[in-house]
Structures are given as structure tokens and as C-alpha cells.
Amino acid sequence: MHWRKSSYSGEDAEHNCVELGRVPDAVLLRESDDPGVVITTTPAALRGLVARIKTGGFDHMAS
Image 1 (tube, rainbow, N blue to C red):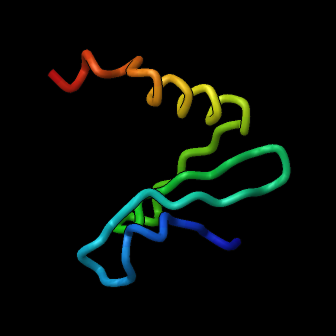
Image 2: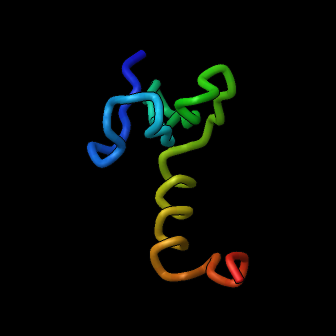
């Protein structure tokens, strides 16, 4: 499994981030500082989540 993370994350341990992996018909997500916990979702569901984040669909949760 090849895990990918944002190039903005850096390489040292202080820059933890979400990592993405791909298997047939699924996308895997994990936190780099706790790689044993993996969330599995579909590509369509992940696209929907990202679209909702980009349009402010969760902004009310941050206030």
C-alpha cells in the first residue's frame, strides 16, 4: 500500500496529517501519527465530503 499526503505536510514527525491510500473500489484514510486506525470509504463519498467542505457545509461546526 502506498500512502499519500499533502506536500505541505513536511517530512518530520511534527507535521502530522491525513494520509490517503487507494485499493480497488475504495479510498483509505488515516492520521499519520496513528496509522493503525484506518477509515474506508468510496471515491464518490470522499468527493462529496470534499465538495461539502469546500462550499462551507461544515462551517457551523467550527464556531
